[in-house]
Image 1 (cartoon, rainbow, N blue to C red):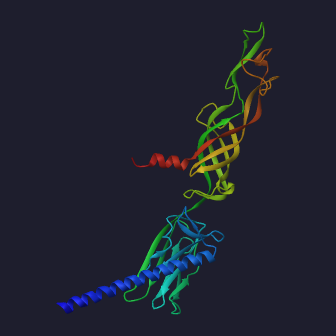
Image 2: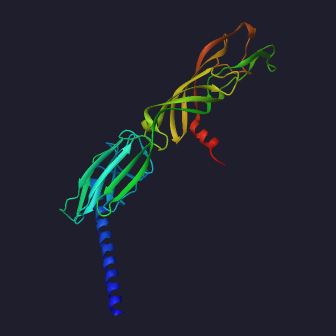
Image 3: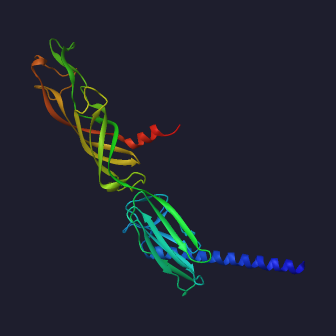
Length: 324
């Protein structure tokens, strides 16, 4: 019994020592990966939990020989502008060979093979850069041995869009009074003024198309730079049978959140005018007016400024199609 107990104790110590040694090697590999990232202009993006070279749009994955990723895990979301590179760290006494493949829409199949050399405590294999991809990509790393081991991961790819449709409310300074008629001014003997509906600026519900000159990813909130968040909007008024599609809105939008933006620009529309009345100086209900209104009405193209907020229609679709 004593001999059996001693053997079990020795085996336990051996396994414990092997585990400790493996953890030490893995920690050393993580340290080497950090130093390599610092020396190679690879920075950590905390928003996406990835290590990326911003200049080349390459996401770098660091893997230990047992298939476990170092520093970070696989990206939860990547874009169709991203490329990928795998760096594999193996111990010097590991004789196995490793292959890496990436299968995606742009590159149906790519297999790169490398062999670990026994030249140091830890060896690093840099597999070639792959990508970009659309829809999804499957990464597969195979390790030889008896039996062989395969590590596989599927990553969803968020595609870049260049246009979207949005809807929202805007306030326009363009004055387009309707139902214009004269009334006497009770405080002034014999003088008249004009009354009208919609005599001042108005809030309208709009439908707008947004164009993104540099592309936009709908799942990843861009940086605060103007280029990453700005777009060009073209739209019109909706939800009123008398004014539908009569206004043309041209301007810019700036995202404050995914699917939400501030919009501003120029509102152009044909509007009702009165000869001899300057809407900039005339106050309906107060300013004096003489003559018959019906003889002085005419239509003219006018322009004003608008500002408001809009929501991408895909957000509405998500809200209305979401399961209860």
